[in-house]
Length: 448
Ligand code: ACO
Image (cartoon, rainbow, N blue to C red; front, side, top):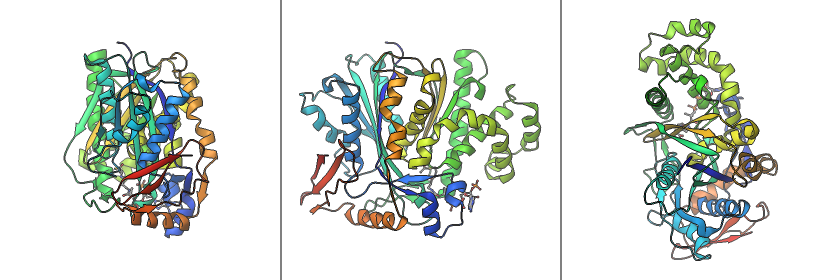
């Protein structure tokens, strides 16, 4: 098999959202903190009729229908998520309903969990399956589904929600450069969910930022050395057309690209302009630790990297800025933004991806893009993703109504024996929604 990768993609996110500018004012934060400081514009969230199961049912149904894929053609289904609804029953089993109807129960795979990294683990599992001797010729299907919510406080504006579905197989327009992977995994307590009675994480915000950037440096070094080993030349940011990052909030993405730029400077890469080199020179002797703490270093790196950020990163930022952190779906929503913005110029290009999940797990890997054959072409993917229209038809809630929704969700988390309002007026046709949870905690969904 050749060119194993992503054949098709679809995405669902709740139509309910809150503007960061309004939230900032409501929270009493200084003006610009969420919009400029964090770099975010809007945040999507689930109301009481939606959750990670309904979102994933919606995304899978939509992908199969729009690309006309027969459910019998799926041989592996993997879910990446960190939103726990049940500690034993996987979300994958929920999705089986869609396949049982067609008589297909022969589908491998379950859920993968490690913060925002689960989607990447699920994706690697499917790609590895297609490349392996146990592959039976059918497609793999990966779903990343999460609802990111935080308790009141500084992390609250970094929530979000979405589900992404990706069809995996050979001869893909988005194929993996399987040999080029750099991974960094370690034990840290930066963001975790030890309180099973609450949907909210425990988070050490500052530590999580530093862990993210350290993991990025480590993965980049490993990616570069793999590249040198297999391609016989030094890698620098000029060797990729786009860099796509896991995006908890946009400011961290700006800082991340600046770090890669600084790495290229330290590696004496010939791709850096003389002017940039001179500006970074004063920081060349910082120790690793100092470089994560130095504000001057951060600002200067961001400033010299800005022109390349605009061309190589900015096209990936649309959905993460508009929706917020989608945890496992965040990296792939950023990638979908590139497909949306650049689908007709991507052929032959390389896209580098950085996946990070607290705790921590991280990998840098890359895709090579080709035209693909209808329906599995980049242009068809862009029209099915239909990003502009989905963003335009959203319903903006006031911060008060958002907070009220969060309170209701806290109350409902882990509860049994209740019915939802079943108010589907804000849902588009085809969307799945939660109807009730019975006295045995069994959940019931319907489709609008
Ligand atoms: N105008 C413009 N910028 C402002 C303003 C303002 N009025 N006020 C603050 N800022 C800037 C700050 O200078 C800072 O930017 P900088 O880092 O470039 O200096 C930025 O806004 C954020 O301000 P902080 O004071 O650092 O924010 P705070 O500590 O209150 O919260 C944090 C930010 C830590 C990201 C918090 O939202 C959080 O904990 N989020 C969840 C954790 C997270 O997402 N971690 C990322 C990796 S792990 C994961 O994916 C879950």
